[in-house]
Amino acid sequence: MCYLLPAILASFGIIDEASSNTYYVASRYLLPAALILMTLSIDLKAILNLGSKALVMFLTGTVGIVIGGPIAILIVSIFSPETVGGIGPDAVWRGLATIAGSWIGGGANQAAMLEVFQYNQESYGGMVLIDIVVANLWMAIILLGVGKTEKIDRWLKADTSSIEKLKEKVSTYTEKITRVTTLNDYIMLSFFAFAGVGIAHFAGHHFSAFLQNNFEIVRNPEKILSSLGSQFLWMVVFATAIGIGLSFTKAKNYEGAGASKIGGLFIYILVATIGMKMDLGKVMENPGLIAIGLVWISIHAGLLILMAKIIKAPFFFLAVGSQANVGGAASAPIVAAEFHPSLTSVGILLAVFGYVVGTAGAYLCALLMEVASNV
View 1: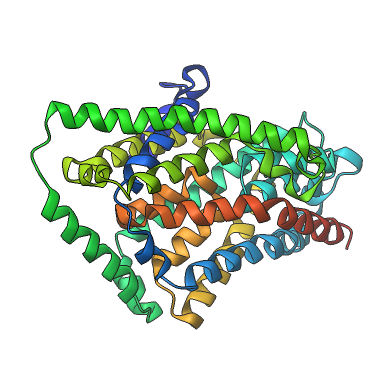
View 2: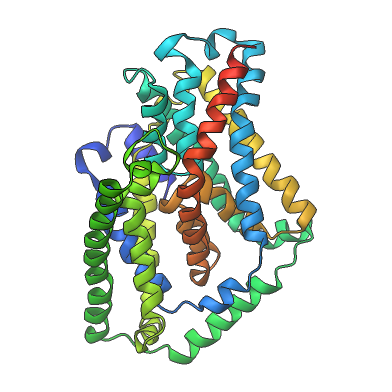
């Protein structure tokens, strides 16, 4: 409901994210604050003990996006060849390449694909709409699945022992340090969160500028590692690092004052602003392209389910591995936190990895989609 209600209100014109700029504020300020507060009491050693299944599921999701695009084009072309046509800058596959960049990495990778393949920017809004509609629909399905985690894990025959041990360890620690929150606690939590946000923005801005100024492979948007020049990426990385750093100090005891709960509130606000970006009335304006997006994400989901079944991976790894691809650093921590606040950093780490492989994966996907469009 936190996601759907704003989407309905935005669709009826009652609220308008574009004029209020709430998503920008939530993603640039509340998200890093939430990351700091939710990683403040992290048990890094226990996170690393979760094993390789998380990475396997993430890479499976990446492969699903890479092969899903060309397969979706081939399937839709059978019923509507004009939908996947176009020549020169108007070629549909060029536009879909930007979605591949978004779904494997994030906004920086998406912009890189737009620059590399020179899609007609007048038509670019339609591709952004497909990205928002399909990706957010898939995220909503995943969030619904969180409530049925135990049932899904039984069907997958998953071994959830490492996840449960981590959750139990964190819960026991939280119960031990829980106290009645005082004004002083709120002041200190605000200090940790927003001083950290300021440092993360400062460091992220200067580090991304340093990389762009000194490395051609980062500065040139046509290069594979151009996404490493994203200020947002490094802001998220530094915010996470600050939270992890605080977890080695007495600051971790502020979890007992509700640090992760306040972080969770910020995440819910972010989810609501994501919902505000969606116009449900435009979903069927271009059913052909929407169909490509739905087939594409279905292949991604199907491959993840198959791999989870084979390696007996928990639904948590499926959900977070998928969102680390499709949603990136903005939504992977949201999904991870829905399982348990202690798991937030798993989503962050995988999302950061997604930024690294995003441009290369999207580039390969685009080449395959070009071939599929000309079959």
